[in-house]
Image (cartoon, rainbow over all chains, first blue to last red; front, side, top):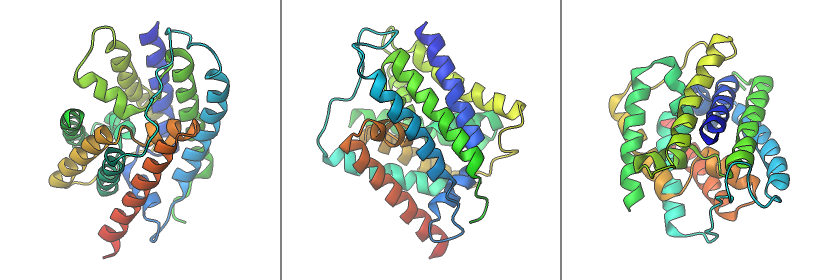
Length: 133
Length: 138
């Protein structure tokens, strides 16, 4: 059941990434090009997503546990540490260079571009290294 | 404001939010793609199948959108091999060290009012904007 629900979530997420246009690196870069020909679309994507998520979380997180697990798996760290800051910085740099972040990168495999595959392989390599640091 | 697509962007965002909400409701987890992928790098028994199906779902969802003609006709990706590799490495490394990405910190983390996620999001957004600004305008 977990796998099926997760599959459904992935499908809905992928649909959202495609419909919003975030699956297109050029559109993301146009949002990040704040001082150029700015496309504010990502603001609405994030705003829309956060509105639904924040409202839903309020009710969901009040329950003792999720539907298919014995407990919620919420990150426990609360402090701002060097890892967070440096990691976010490195991620921002990579994202700004190509216009792809993990979700859209995987979803955009639907377009069959070899560049996407290359990016994802490099991403997985980066993850493998970062996990051990 | 070139190419501003308010309706489809908002609709897409609502779908992403729905996915994140269902993910928390059913699996009790943050819908952060870097985290989901990271767990697949060192699969733990009983913990990898839902990760794999989520990833597969991402591609299926995008394929479905294409099939229904509600996705972009095509995507424009950098043709530079070195850039794709360096960018990929940085995104992988950064999300692992920083414990999250746009979905994990940006959508989910901020939606539960996590200070860590707010700080992370402000940083990666700021650095990304600075990067594009420098690359395109200097």
